[in-house]
Structure formats: C-alpha cells, structure tokens
Length: 396
Image 1 (cartoon, rainbow, N blue to C red):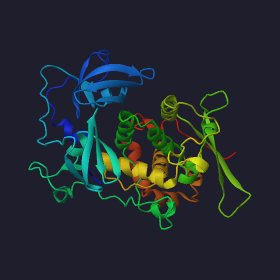
Image 2: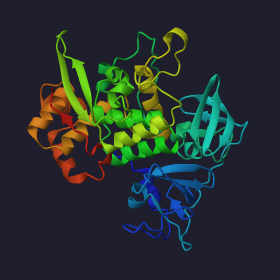
Image 3: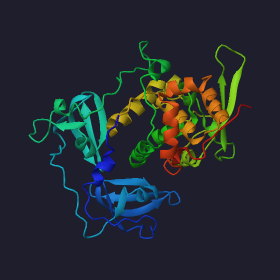
Image 4: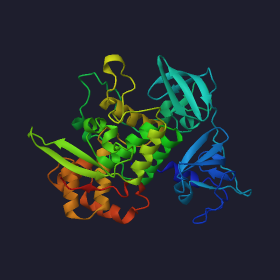
C-alpha cells in the first residue's frame, strides 16, 4: 500500500520551474503552464465562477480545480529556462493496430483523439486516457520490441478484487461480504486525484457519485435510491442538508433519522452534474440507470453498476486500492473521525453506519484509534477539502 504517488515521482524529473505559492495573478487565459504529467499547455478559459481552469495541451484538453492545482505545484508557470522532462521511450499504438490489456486481453485500436484511446475487445468497447494507459502499463502494443509483456508488468499492477459482478447473478457478492475486502481512501491526495480524473474526463455523474458517496456514508442500495428531491427543493435550490431515514434492523416500524450537511464540494459536483443534463424531474432518481428501457425505465443505477464504476476508475488510474461499494462508506467514516475529536460526535458517526461502538466502527474501516490520532496531526483542513463543512446532525 506504500506506493509512491506518481505525481510526486514526476516532480523529480522537472527542470527549473517558477513556483507561485501565493501570487497567482499571472494565471489567466493565454498564460503558458507546465503540468507534471501532460507537459506544456496553454490556459484557455475559467469555468464555474473561476472554480475550474481549462488548459489545452499538445494532445488533449483538460479541466482542473482552481487554485488547488497551482497551490499544490501540480501545474506551474512555464519559463523558457525550464528543462522538459525526458520523454518515455514507448511506442504508442495507431488506429487499426493490436494491443493487449491485463483484464480484457487482446483488442484493436479503433480511435485516438483528444487524449482518449478507444479499443475494441471482442464485442466489448473500452475507452482509456491516452497516453496514460500506455505509460501506466494498462495497454501494451503487441509485437513491439519496446513494449514489456504483462508478465513483466505484473509486479507494478495492483491486485484488486474480481470485477465479475453481475446485477442478475445470484452468486454475486453482497455488500456486507465485500466489506472486509475493501479499503477506505485515507490519503486526501488520492481523493483529489480521483476527483480531477473525473473532471478531466467530464464524467460528471461519476464525479457526483464519488463526492456525494464519501460525504453521506450510506449503504449502496439506499444511496442509489436518492432522488433529486432529496437534494433539491421545489424552487430548484440545493438544500443545506439532506434527511437520511433508514429502517432500524429487526424493527419494522422504527426508522433512524438524521441530517447530513451538504458541503461546498457536494454543491459544486451537483451543480456540474445538473448543468449537463438536458432535463430532469424533481421526482427522478438522482443516478438513473442508462441500460433500462421500456417497462424498466426510470429505475436507479444498480449496485453492481456502481461497483463497476468504482472498480473501473481504480483500474484506469492504476491505484493500489482494494475497492468495493463499501469503500465510499469507509472513507466517509475515516475522515469524519479525523475531523472531530468529540466522543459524542464519534458515536453519532458510528450510529449512522449501524455500529454500536467506536471499536466496531474502527474494525469496519480497517484502522485504529492511534492511526486516527496520528492522522489528525498530519492531515490539514485544506487537504481535507472534500470533507470540510460536512457534518452529521443528531437524529430527529
């Protein structure tokens, strides 16, 4: 699990770069920048009230969170003295050529454009980031001297649980069965990387699923039952908090009720998601299944579909995380315990996740009280941006 952050690793390859820690007055459309992974680029626009910056690179265009990426040194001002990082000696595929993937096997490249590559594996079509999929070893060109085999890459590729979940398969793992196999995402920088991956790919639904999931901590089935009306009022305004109502185990007539405050990170994600929708009804499911038609229309996304989204993200980004649908709940609990030392509040967190004691909750997360205490000293509020302002309010 102690895998070096690829962004940190790439910092060592940079030459001279001018660092702007506080003065970002130079950051404007037309300014030249350099990204530690994508290289030299040009700022073209600011989006969503200057919360995001759009940059065009030589082979792609991407959107980043502003000013976070500049403050963290992920993107810096380009200066003429800068020595560009050495290009990796890798032969990239062309349309029509064969490649192989660790999971999907042999495929044929059908499309390469705007930083994406499309590959057809038999009857299945997949899209990956280009050239990142080759640089990270997910895609390998067949019969190329410069391309290592998947056996040679085996030690570099994280081993995650099988993705052979089928929504209609009776042998599929249940949510509780997957709990012990999954990790909480404890490192805020990994959370930021996942968010930026979704933003750059313009996957607004998946972006909201992730940010909302780590801020509500709900079981997958209940989470996917959320409707627009749970987060948006009849006037079209985002609610300040969402009411959670869950049935208490073994008590048919009793429900546990509490509120979760919707922080700025959730609001940003929800606004971007709604903005790209052609239309929606306040009574619609927030995450509607795209595969149901006819009699099954207006159904929510399935649990196994949620798993495939999370698993696919981890695979595409080459993250060393044991992922499951419980990962979002564990991440929620872990960071809420870090943010608040109050024992009463910690009990509220445990109770919201159906655990009677803090010890049981820590066991579910896969952590200890000592780790929580140490993390409080190591993780700052600015690093925990996606949880700032998130709070559980006692049962009503």
